Length: 436
Image (tube, rainbow, N blue to C red):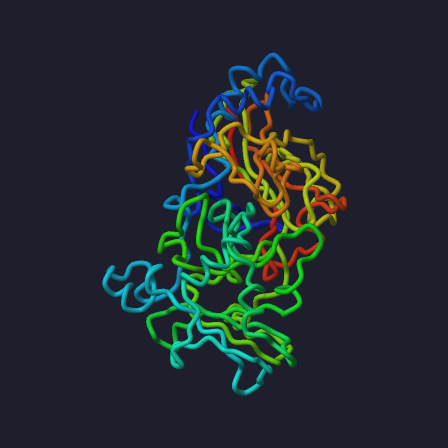
């Protein structure tokens, strides 16, 4: 059967997502049937509603194949989707130009200075102009005792498909801040990357100093990142050094980091705020599909698969709902809270992590993983992604609409509790298919 593959076509209805975003589908094939062995697929519960949901004997030949074709959990560096800015994009510059402007490990440097208009009392500044800039050798010296790693899905604020999932490694930003020996009046950290020495192209972001110096419960620190999945950051991924903020959308994780200003200003100056975006909201929890058939024969079982982004509020379940064209929709129910949603299966951790990890092992130590066994300490992992699957059968001929949603650990059904688009994508996805 023909398949609709991930984030393809969505239609506007109430709080639903519209527009085409198939640019962001990542067809990874590293997760094979060994995932199925780990998942114990034969024992996965099926939730029945009449004849719509398939019976257990059907899953071996249909659902197992769909699960075996899922993308890998971790993404290879060169398979991340790219939404970089710049004309030209800094990662596309010739190697010799990268050397000249500090976009290699050998030539990278970072200014860490006080805001001249809203000064912070520092005992020391790092500055190219003064010949005291912080360099990659200094970063590696800190890494010997302070390096951290964590799993994070990289997501754009207004796009419904993650750009990629990785194990990010770096030095906590606070370690560099403390080297300036701040004394007073430090309220916010502003930072930007290299953008062709053109002020009009500058893309900047910021964080309150409290988030930099102290980590909220169970969150890893904000880092100056230099590795992804155990390998040096490529230029396209923001290397040699970028910021990575664990709980934030991608615009906070500035690429090609070059300048940091410590300020007494109390508010953000993020470039993203200029386009009416909420620059303080953390990652949301939401679900979307990866594989749905365009057409299927009547009374023939078929599988749907997808992923869920596990935001700051966690994930308790993924649900799906199939609605036949012409049937009445729930009245006065913008987000379909009263619709007959049915639980899908949230898949366990994979046997094959993907992402090019050496020996398929999560590096030790990595935040959120047991240092002895390498197993996740919880699943689904917050701030990561997880896959889901559902087997469906018994549909009569007609046109249908498939929706998927998450329910977070607080019991909030997508798109709640933050349904507003400018604070991060969470719209309910709608996929149309036909039964003949």
